Length: 326
Ligand SMILES: [Zn+2]
Image (cartoon, rainbow, N blue to C red; front, side, top):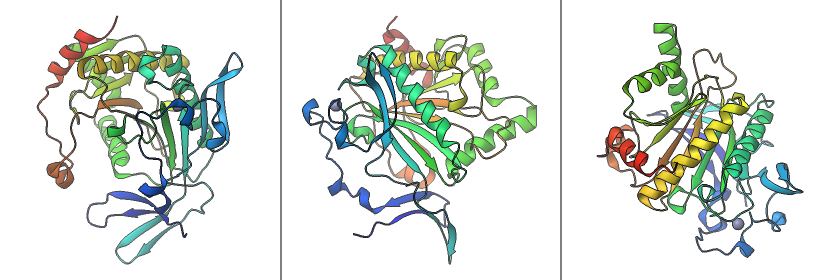
């Protein structure tokens, strides 16, 4: 079987797509919400069913979080880096990193587990991102978590993923450009300006701490989306201080519990947005976004990138504040 692994750019819109032919549905494990822990490759005792451990965090002699290469990688470090033109088409080799982080030994959603699990899972993600910075071929280091079959998770055991991309995708380019444009216009940090605006307004705040603000997204792409904004802006998640990481873990844990209390066990996605790490990071700060997936996208989103929904961020904040556990 010839494996095709490429990053293709849509010549009309600039959207990128990763093509990884071995990720065909038939060869990936079927989502199995009722899969017993005994058959789960991410449960303790089944480590031989995954790629070897790259790094782990251990407590009392056993791992509590474990990182390893994805068995069905979208990108691979072994592939030589290249970008070429084929007429109107730009193609980049499928070069990059794609790792899985099992976030707890328990076969249960992170928000049902003690906060320490979320803290250790984030610590391990940061350690992997820091390590991948050494690979000069990578432009963007991406952390994300899909929780629940509706959010694209193929395994119910709590896990996140880390990817190193050999190019700057269009949306990350826009993220960096918005922050730089604000800096050029005002001389200040966009992240700080948003934090100040949210604190002045107050209606969307869910968690307000020394190190981190969690707000019902003022421009939510998805209903009930929540933004986690560090008060000490640094370019990338892996540069966060230990205190900020602790605050992030605590806020994500609280907000996830509130979302589940409000909507039941909905699929959740969490993503970190960071500066492209090979560029001047001036003015760009990382943040994390958490979204429940209550509805699927449709034609308008497909055509324009616009989403449309009916939940005002202030209303979402009221609902979540009523259900955030103390
Ligand atoms: Zn499991």
